Length: 340
Image (cartoon, rainbow, N blue to C red; front, side):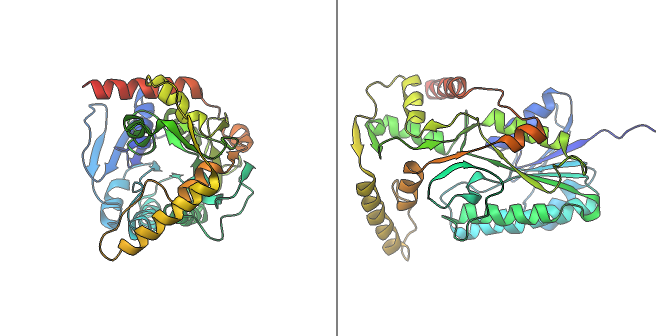
């Protein structure tokens, strides 16, 4: 009997992480389709680029038909109203699950977040045995947890095998959120400031490593090897003092003498509280997202690093690009971007 070749569908395949997953699959010769809100790129190697909305059950079912492996990477960017995250990360994910079962998809890989177990307090060598937060720090993390639970609970439905990956702090070229914010901060001269004493360790994940983990998870996903119905934390496996990360990036961008002004954590929390209060007062008129908030101060001053032994042992994962090399590549991309 001839084994049927896999046909991959990357939901959100035009996005930051999804695009890299698509490229890695295409580079090894797989049959790949993309499902996204808009046609953001052209590649003759693609089987098809399906334009549609994850919140539309009909669009999602149309995209899943004829596919054997679905990778669901779609999620709204940070800074949107809470309703956007519930609509996409929860309702949209449930649409994906139903469509996969109805279309006879055999594997579903879901992009979750390491923050589903982070509540702002120190997280040291966190692993998959830790429970979800009772109270999440924002709607993004709350809805990622709800979406992950739905995906893992669906394992076995109609023969569908599911797995969830929890990357920590994805960054890299084309990162229009975290890295772009750091680049803009450097342009404004804000590379001189840090909050806290920089003694807290943090885990980041280069986008190529996160994508590689998704491909590995799809390849390894089977009912008898401890992957189906499981979540896996993914990092670069190089915990780094939090402010060392932007310091290296800024140095790669050509800035020197960085981080010369230190704002203590208590002062940072006070400033964050004031900014949160102003945002709350203005909410009836206009929703704003200040550069500083209590949430952000908690994020940049807490330990937040993980033990990825489970991913190493069951997926065979190990980073393919080091943190230093990843930061060099990322800075090089942004220097080229600015030059154009």
